Length: 83
Image 1 (tube, rainbow, N blue to C red):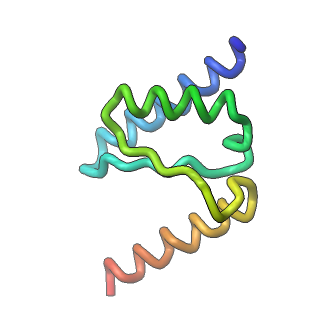
Image 2 (cartoon, rainbow, N blue to C red):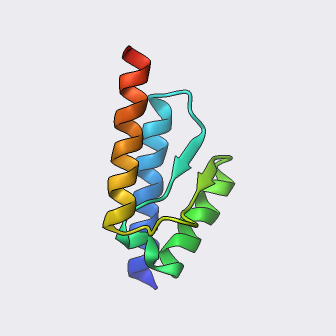
């Protein structure tokens, strides 16, 4: 359990840093690590306590397929923002 707590705290620390650089208050948890229910639960609880809206997968797996979809989404967002 200590490993799960340490990893989730590191993830939450990264989110805090990211939030300090942007006005967004929404985070998407993606990647194979979030197939781990304990880690996902700890991160979701931490994000909720920070007042951050969190999104998780329902139709797309949180492993490599989910990472690819997330990268495509961000790429599309950046192209639309600049264009």
